[in-house]
Image (tube, rainbow over all chains, first blue to last red):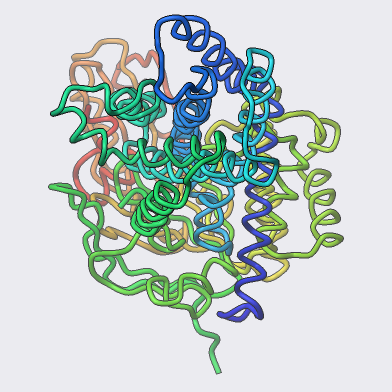
Length: 263
Length: 319
């Protein structure tokens, strides 16, 4: 007879999460169209925005526009990709797979943790690809390798958070198309009213008030400071604070939603 | 000492908005037996299964599976059950083997045991040949079998099958029934839902009939059939006007009230001994000069069961 409490809950939770992470990575490898779009879109972002805007936009401080823009594009591309999380979970839900997993003796957070980790691993490839393409069009990290890695870690953390938000949306709306649209809806307005494309100081006063508290601004400023060199602790602490704060709310909500699917 | 029931439910109730899906369902399934939960669409079969498999919390009532409380000890319940839902819940971007291995890992079986179990089940459900192809290339029947195999990976003590024969061809159904019998021989308890009296008859020692969230009858298939009144003799008269007189002629041969459809010229008579009754019916109608255009002797269907037990047909035939 099985017992109620397994010997080591944490070990099993990690093992279950690894199983689910691998499952979702297989999805990317075996749906070439999905992986293709996930990789082509970021490349297009880099090429379109740098070539179209570089001539017209001058940023203060003698910074090349491509250097100014790339940190924001990392976050924008990852934000677009995060909608896949909710779409994939809504598909699982529709096919009865979530019920199958919920009836298994696996750790409750394992499915969502596995999915968001798989999406984070995919995002690593997205950022590396963008760095490579960005390098070809003139983008450089200016503060050394270790700091460059930190500069990449911030967009990945943002992507991890956005995946959890999208997971919550996907499990709540239960329909892949709605999940995709709902996950993308806030991305464009949030990105354009942040420091992604232009310095906040160049915006109208009322917009500056919003842009300064826009969480995307904090994340972009932190990434940019780490990429370009310069004072980093202010924006970085703000970015870390809102990412961790949001995760502390969204992760329990999404897991609660998973436990109560179909109620 | 008597062993406690493998499944015990008391007063299960569940409401979705205005819909009272379950209205006080009681069940007791002895260990090592098969219970057939029989009912039309919307009767509450799936809701019952979802509560017993910890997927849904009841609004009221209690349930224990293998002695564990489904609300307070859901993790323990999940470690001893298997569930195959109404849809083939398999991952189509994985191969058949990968699906089973994944289920084994999530049951914490250990690597070697998982691989052995997956191979065993692929053989048993005749899926070995396609095992390493992605499931998205598989037929619907194969997916359905894989789904059933996945529900067995953890060697469940209690297995829940929600309309398991949906989407299976006769051969697949036969194989499923064999698998269920094999499990029960090994000591497992099975609860299966079905809309087909025949399926419940084939597999289940005990049948519970539910309708609109309530248990309306239960017993062995023999007991239910005698409540329903044996087989059905269906007569179609050449002239529909002859239905009334024909019904009067044969009334005393039936074991229950007959149904007359004057418009179609049909008489349906419940009978217990077809071999004896059939020639007598033909003789009497022939002597009275009432010509038959069709004569069928059939087993009672779910519709007959419902008509006999509730006085109303199933929702399916009503709409």
